[in-house]
Length: 307
Image 1 (cartoon, rainbow, N blue to C red):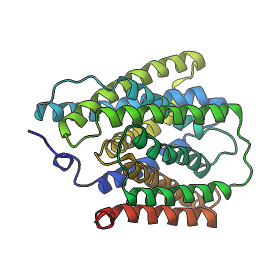
Image 2 (cartoon, rainbow, N blue to C red):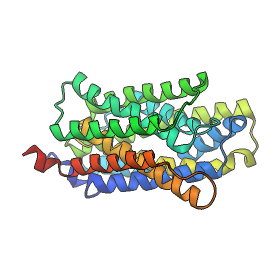
Image 3 (cartoon, rainbow, N blue to C red):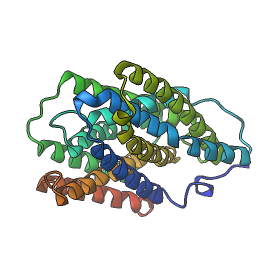
């Protein structure tokens, strides 16, 4: 018996977007609390990776049980996307540790690249792209372009360039495998795929955490402050992955995911400004956020536009 996505996805993709945005905001706050700086990167990445590892058994067990309930076979198809998810996780944490790169700067660089990937992946795999998704994607790209333009001149170091390059490469690989193997209305297939992907993500992060600890020999006090950031990111990873695995085209699901995290970043930036921990977002950033909200509104009314 085939189960459609609404049989097990929590009510709506919009609730997933809310969960993802909330978890991502918690990740940003926790990471900033840990004070990521270039000199402490090994300790930061070690603590972050361990935090992710501590949380991942929860969704892995839940997804595995769901897959068994739905009677799906144990299809091991998430190896490469799991490794890519680990690369993305480490690159994400790394991106916020560079001097002069604020929360919104890092978010806009990363989100803009992934938004561009979405229609390319759909087209390369022969999936159709609805008009509403193209409109939302266009609005999202304009928003990101405006925000980046308002940032002024930023010197991109080789290390930052490599980090962003790995981040986008990881997403290109991960989304391609996800789209081919598990972007389906069959709930059991999605549950099996994501549980397998997260197992490989945990494995890769465990190896990375051990290697980073050996390289830095960070004491417990050095990486302990970053554990909460890893826990929050693992929650965001789970909710965000469920959004990506929605059966609709990437040009629909990716803007929802990226928009939720960008708005979370704006919220956190305002919170930091309110407590004197940073400058408030500029006017052009607010315009960009407004365009993201318009894009999400277009997606919300997609069925009406489609007809």
